[in-house]
Length: 447
Image (cartoon, rainbow, N blue to C red; front, side, top):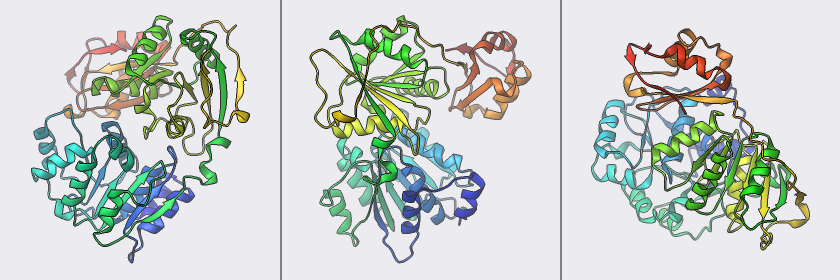
């Protein structure tokens, strides 16, 4: 059993009130065993459920003991990444669509994880095929469970609950208010226990109104592209997400910003998973300072670097608006949100107009700010036994870099990307041309 206080001390983590309440409630031996945790986007729900989960896991038993269900691949990967950051000996595996089930089955047999992070459809597939022993699962977490239902996974989620009926504890999380009468809660409740509700949606610690500055920007033209370019120039390279309502709009705006030489990436559900992942990685590592995204990026994605949110298209409802601005108010951070209003648009009723400032950018010249970092692509990854330390050593020794000139490094299964200071990237590429890393020749690209 993992000593959570020692873990928190080693990792220098201080729990917030919501996380402390979740930990204390979940660890009670006499119940409640089923918990509904309601807390805003960006408030730290992942850590809140991971800590009590870890306390229940036996590290000496190489079998699945906890399952976390998440609505999207990105959220599943982020959940696993958060677990890894805690640096325990607990093994985990991430299961999601877009790759062969058989490949994941092999990984399950190789890793023998104690924790599984998975999307609903893929997890149900593995359960049906009995690709892992479900009888040892003690904890079932359905993260952003309302989003799972909203995305059409109700049957899959209910099937998972049925297949994992031996789970002693079921924890649901949501960033929006959920009615107690929801069929999922009722169905699980019939199995012997109602849910203990931990509601922090209106808690003052997560009051975004006190942590986000709301600014209205008028566009003189119905087509807001030029106004957007001027606003981004005004922000001078601050990490910014531009939210739009449609994939086609994201691509169109991306083409415009690219033509104006902004350091930007596009992110939407119509992109291949690989491209979506790389877009996020480049935004996180500072190689891009603008991310143009649909509302798929408004929920759950852990992007702590964001300083500003721009609503190119108006949010459809209050919940969408809350999720969007949550990207710029992670935990206790502060941010700004800009609402671009066209000549025939008005602010939505759910916005408090008296607390909204106005900004004019009509005289602002379009001057993109270069990203501080550039991305070095390495055509090898975890499957080839490549680690972050291998990359750091290689780029410092062969590439002539100092540690301060290297940024974030991400290692995927078959590739890795490293952020390098932009003014050093050309010399690094020249120095490592033709060199081997861990005895392997690979391809290096600036992207």
